[in-house]
Amino acid sequence: MSFVQPRGDGGRRQLAIGVAVVFHLVLAWALMNGLGRAVLQVVNAPIETHLVEEVKPPPPPPKVIEMPPPPKIAPPPPAFVPPPEVQVQAPPPAQPTITATVPIAPAEPPPAVARVEAPPAPPKPAAPERVSAAVVCSNYGKVMGDAAFPRDAQRAGLDEGSALIQFTLGPAGEVRDIKAIQASHPSFAKGAMRIVAEYRCTGQGHDVTVQVPFAFKSN
Image 1 (cartoon, rainbow, N blue to C red):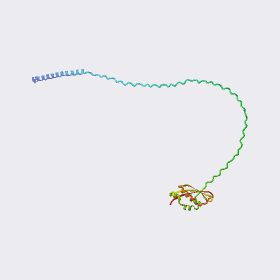
Image 2: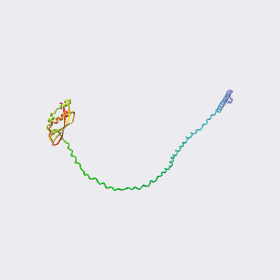
Image 3: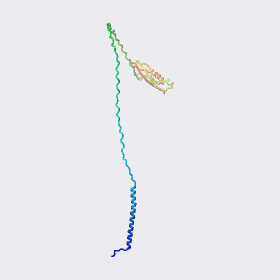
């Protein structure tokens, strides 16, 4: 077995080694130049510094000092002015008065006057009693049935009317003091009083007041 290498392989190895050495040298030079510049640029770059100002708290608000109210001063009392002195003169002594006393005779009592009493007033007459004409007058029905419509009312153009007649019936049955209490027209009052004058009544022993209503209507 031979340990001697052929010459052709040795030249190739040396060439490869040389190329590798040259590559490494070039790489080292490039690295040295590039990194040096980068380091110089980094070192030579300006350094910026910022000063941070301390934030001061705001000053406290000013204290408000309340002034006490001024004390009330009472006005001074008015100066005392003494009243003027008035000299009062003593009145002169009263002179004694002499009066004469005259006895007065006692007055005589007035004479007694006899008391006269007035006579009592006469009693008032009793009011007349009222009765119905149909009761005390015997011909009441006949007279009222024969009564005609007043002619004066017909001439006045009236068709109907009314009247209230009052009269006094005496103790003997006489009819007196005939008067109209109310009437819708004077012609009805006159006609009704003429009818009452025809009554024949019976006396009651005393005066009696009788009222008779009338209602007239033309047929």
